[in-house]
Image (cartoon, rainbow, N blue to C red; front, top):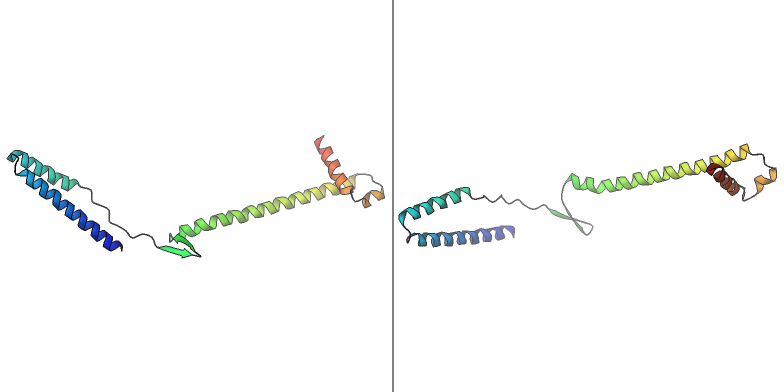
Amino acid sequence: MNVTLSQTSAAVEEQFARRVTARLSAGNADLPHDIGERLRVARQQAVARRKIAPALRPAQVVMTSGGAATLGGGWWTRVGAVVPLIALVIGLITISIVQDENRVNDMAEVDAALLTDDLPPAAFTDPGFAQFLKTDAGDTASR
């Protein structure tokens, strides 16, 4: 379809150019010779300076993947699709490491509090003892 469209467009442009040329040539007969020559030279210069239209290149192939249309852009498209996934995995691993370190630090604080305080044996069986140690350690750290 693009070939037919470009051929039709070229034919329309050619027809327009011929009409403009005929119109300019018809009006040229009524002008004095020196003005007609200057116009002819000006037309030749304009044609020599005209911009040459860039050659048309075919559009990229559109591929479908799972119902979504994607442009076949090569390996940059694949890299661009993988980078967010890699960032997500790195973020999840970082969150896991930070949570593990926090959990280990909390357990170390409880163990340090148990080993350094003088407590009766009944305190070790109390269900709220770990919470007491956490709040007591937090109060000590804020002082």
